Length: 283
Image (cartoon, rainbow, N blue to C red):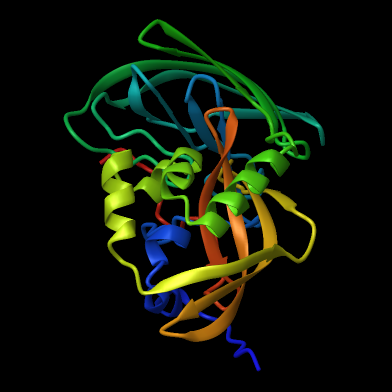
């Protein structure tokens, strides 16, 4: 009779395929729906521009925001933006004033927020934006020291099927090169394709015998503006001659305008939440 278990991350590591199926992410990096968070993130997949702003008119920090983009780094205004909610589907915000710029700050990825780092300087900031908090769309015009940025954000398309099929095929075949090509940078962990294949191939110790979707894919946009596609699966393996089974979810992330493989999360892993790291503030 097949042994059935619900492995945590340590259990997957015991299989010897942990790096193949589970990405080691920084604390609080994975995100789930948390609409109680008053701040909302909007990301432009084409340009990499990112804006996070508190749109809750009842919150003490209403209007506080920050902006990051390639070529400007991270910008934190000295005071909140002015909000003008026209309707439930049209919120407008505006800012024109001074702030602090961290030109060399590490920009936000799709699962992590930017933090002030490196040398800082003053900046003139102008922001004019519209958003629909229900549809999670935004159209924002930003000027940093006169340099213009346009941010257009919308939830990811619900078309992760082809990527999901390719990931399952790669996992079943233990095709490490294909998995690398399909993976998000958090899965690659800074390794080249050759390093990834060599490192994962050296772990050994187990083999995949089956991977079967058990339900429909669910699409989630977090309050931080990250888009995930979650598919429930059963993952069958043999470890030291003993078969076992893990119930889990394959997690894809939408980044750079396409779906990428991020991780396989066991169902008994701790529930995820948006990052609770404080938003960047001027020192």
